[in-house]
Length: 122
Image 1 (spheres, helix red, strand yellow):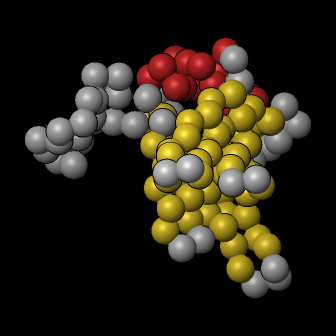
Image 2: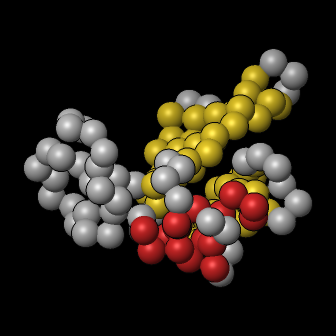
Image 3: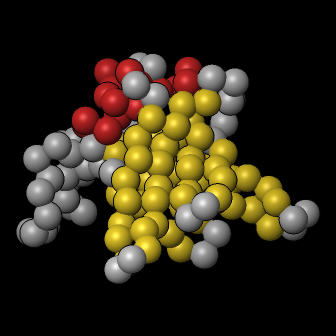
């Protein structure tokens, strides 16, 4: 699982194994160590949810994904789901969770568990 944050935008990219685990177990969590501190990020099924939502608490970003979306996600061609979540009256937080595709450029990271890229360029 990868996370990308820019201003009021949070995007999670999930490998094949991540998508399958989210659909069956309902939860993923990873961490990044910063010396003695850690930053955590997770994705969790939301049985009552109809759209994406998120929270930041105790050093962890958790994105909640509707359970109905995750159940068949590993077997279908849907790339992802997104939402604009309003807060503070005028601002929104853009959320996106999507399948992670293999990059067609020469990239040093292991991409063996990523989805085949349907595009010709990255």
